[in-house]
Length: 450
Image (tube, rainbow, N blue to C red; front, side):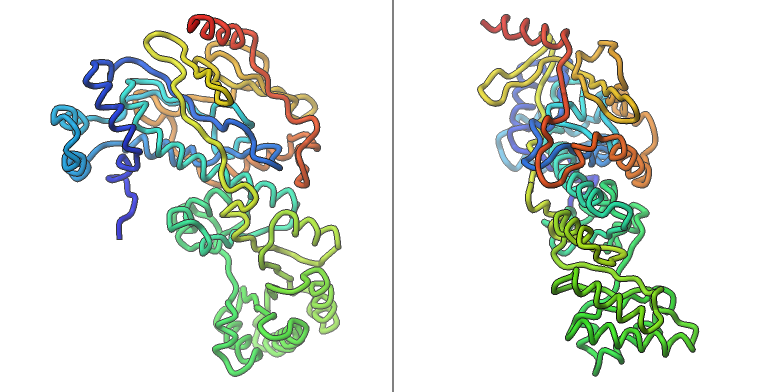
């Protein structure tokens, strides 16, 4: 089964990147200086902000970018590229400078998230992977942040692997969900690769594989005496809760305690109240209630509003597939080359010229507005893009996902309250302006094209 690995990742590239590179080489401009920037054109509907994610994976990719012998052999087999061009690819490494925001940073439409500056050919050819990595993970992290706003201090686990769009999406989706505020993941591989806490209960199949719920609960709890969570809705949820309470009483004499029960179907609000009463009446107020089953930020907000006594949530498909906004309009465009600042002026897709920086202003512990500026401007506020690669080498070691999540949580705390709404767009939206110098540069570039 083929996988995208460090040795093959350079081939995760659209063909036109390679044909343009070959043309640049033939024209003798492949080594000319250029700068490309990656950003999201505009916020998806019902989003008031985005959470940058996938940045560190993009840096990892750039750090190991190369065309190995297999890659060159395949390109040669297409019988459309000059052998000298392919020979140059075979010996090429990544030599560009890269600036970027950090994973977990709250961002908005039109703001550059990554800037790649260096030889035109190299900066062009990494487009596809960067768009894929940052677009997908930003989508998931942004959805997870909305779930985090709905759950508040109540933890939620990522359950999305089985509905993710392929294996790599499951792994990267688990990472992005954690950056966006999830407390754990069900995906063991994500736990191993990223150090994310793993969590899980049991499936209905486990209960069905036993003669009775009681037998299933006893067997499972004895196997996992410290953290058993029992799934109680295979048959009848209230009966399952009573059996779980009886099992908890029985096992207490063996020094085993039941950590929680899980509800996965039905009217979760009313069932949570009923189950809480059953457990408490049986003297087991220490047993937590965990809820799952098609949840998203809206259904969780409704459960919270109803006062449902739920201690943790599992969120899967709606988060990893970001059902209501299944993509972000992420783009990667040339902004500067040997002739100076560059921009598109096509209707609906106009870009801002030149290499840029974003300055974030705050007052009273809250974000008050961002300014997109020319890169070398010095303006009030905190610059969001910092250098992450110099000459193709990492400037700093990779961050942990916990650091990225902490940045996200701090960012959520600093968001204006109106932007924390999950039921519709903020009015007015968060202010993102362009500086006077950038506005002047835009006018100059447009004027030079006439």
